[in-house]
Image (tube, rainbow over all chains, first blue to last red; front, side, top):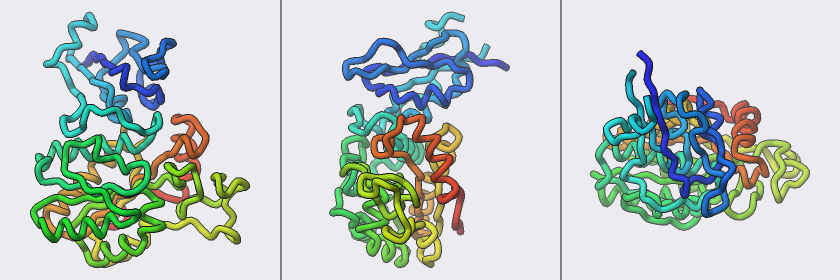
Length: 73
Length: 253
């Protein structure tokens, strides 16, 4: 049973530490080229179809700015 | 499946717990403090003890911890959080009282307080963040700084003949009769963070059952003090901190 997921990053709270990037098992997350209001390159979903909704990124996020969604397909 | 069909409220599997406030944390990017704050807040939320939890914040970066959780807080003088927690727990025995301390606070100036609070077996939870450096004041050497580790007060690396040896205070505390649960964890990966959350939950449950002092050390990073990026400092911690501060339960009864 496979599952598909998606994340929503609170880009204004994200500090671009990239701890979520290295913890993502499917390499879905990357840091954006754009910066947020504080000048940080925030995290975003670089590929839209690879996320499995494992919540690893949200678990390690120090600023708790990631919300994870998952559906079974 | 379109991404808009996935991002719906009914599909949420992880979101920020309501125990955390909406304030943006003042910690540096990638700081372990934020992750540990979140884990504590999630444990408090899952146990349903938000109204019964009292935190004692230390002096150090985590002094502002009261800005980030919707629970009752006190702020102690440097190193005196266990003394304040003792008083709070004795006056309100039905509350869950925890201290949140760094290595400069707990292992240096507050050694007497933590030793005697643990030896008396106060029914409190101690969360000990060990990043081997004084983060807030500019990266000075702490008692837990590793041999050879460069800090602003040991620019050529810590030397045993000049600066003494790193202090394994968690092992010392495990020898005290009053402690019931002593463990060392970390939060650099999702698996480690989940283990730490389990340990924190167990510590709070012990506090509710009046079994004695529960002590949870979290080996952490201070990427600003270590002059590394957050990801580099996690790797550095795995390579250098874990051999000297091995993870796992030291005492559980």
